[in-house]
Image (cartoon, rainbow, N blue to C red):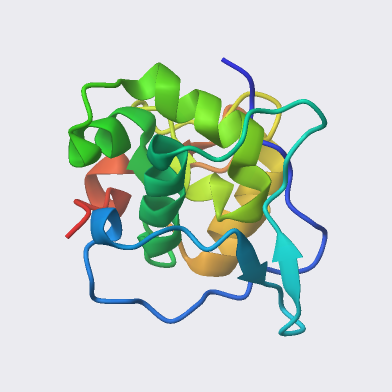
Length: 149
């Protein structure tokens, strides 16, 4: 699995929570950055176009509250699209830089490989419950897991 693209160095500016379920909202391919300017979804050259599944994954990630997380498998199960954690990981590796990628982690509480230190800065800033702030960084899944409601 490829790790998510790191976000821009600007701090994350969470958008207001939309009470509508994510699977009913189309993903906006232009997200507001912390200056209120629109920026396109982070797409590598030659990456596939944003399909319905990818859009739905990004909508779920956008809805995860500050200080909470979901595993790749949690997102796959929530969407019920017949696809699994690897497909969610693929979406995050291609488009994850446009969303709060650090809130999507492995089921054991570890962030994507190679992103421990960047993810840790976000976890500390957001007050995400941790089991370990030393490598390997580990989120306390029992306290931080968001059920997606």
